[in-house]
Image (cartoon, rainbow over all chains, first blue to last red; front, side, top):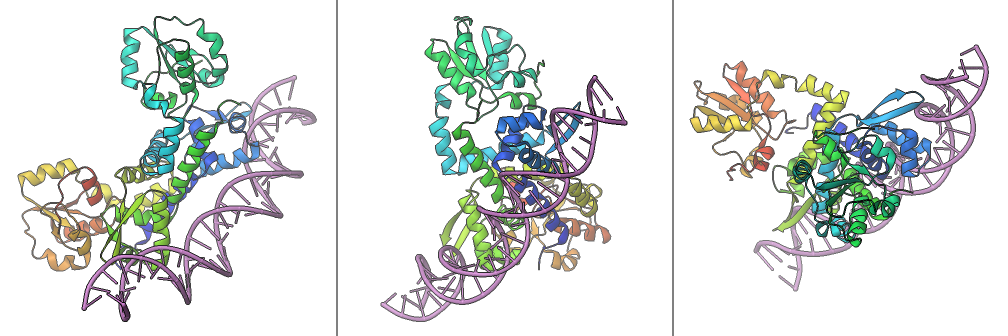
Length: 221
Length: 221
DNA sequence: CCATCATTCAATCTATCAATTGAATTGATG
DNA sequence: CATCAATTCAATTGATAGATTGAATGATGG
């Protein structure tokens, strides 16, 4: 009775299929990496520490679900997100999880608990501070991700070279570090290291993909 | 190497589990119904046309995922959404699906193609028109859903009683119909029926849950 | 305190999905 | 056109999730 009509059922089935495509750790990780920009299968497989064939399958599942698309460039096939609604969907997923799953709150509090302590800088605030000058902006992602796009004027200082780079930083300016996104620990570690060395350091509250998704300027190469 | 740290993995696993909880037709349907307000297991099972035990299991899965919560009222256990971020997540899912899955676009065009033809009224426009007066507002959901909460001043006219009710409607005023949400066909059918009878009729672009989620006034019982 | 009823649990079967392996295909480059 | 590297396909295995049934739970209301 009432409203069990077929087209609605079909739509629900499609939505469910889309949700299932998000329902795997590796695929979420892939989507997070792709949020940074285009990536080859090789790059993704290496980053996830999984065999190529395995990652390839997950990527195809994502493609069948309409979440990612591909293009060929030379020998490589490059995958990208199809749409900036995809990061928004992932953000919605994160928000619901953070607010309603006790275990997630627990993990965030335990491992990202420094969050509040490290006084995250919002995008708007960072923009204002950059206009004023007096801020050193640090991109603490690996060099290839930096090369594929980064915030204007950011210095690339991967975590393993942070100690060496610290010496060269001016001590009279505040340092703002950013990395991949809200759950990437790279910028946490960088800020902690910088503070131990006596710097005034804070972290951008979210990462590069969110900056790009907000339509703000990006510098490449 | 790089950033495969354990807490991030744990979070991704949690997010994936949450996504899987959305990955079933019945559960999405349940969430949609719960978007209207609290419901007993019995009411949900009847609406979905599924055995109680089956629905109960799905509901418990949703509860374990943190998407719904329960309270007891007399003999009934009432389920509700835990958080208004949940409808937002569902909306994000819909948006990605509508924009990127060819089959979804196809279904929407075929079965909800009348959408544009029926000139949907936005919430803001409806608010303005209601203030002016001169609009008859029709809630075409089943009576129990209407009873649990409806737009202020709306008349409840379930689809099966529409033909009888049409006679009583004033012909000099425009009629706006609404139902459960963007993919509920009830209001489409109502508007078509009204137009066949010579009424000026349009539909609210989304449904009751969205109205409520927007924090607008709701009338109960 | 007991009978009743809505809901949940437990156990089973079936179907579907993920990971793995090795082979096949594709396209670029000499 | 041949070769090589990158990617994809295909087939197998093991694991996991959904539906169904019948019984158990636990709160209510007399």
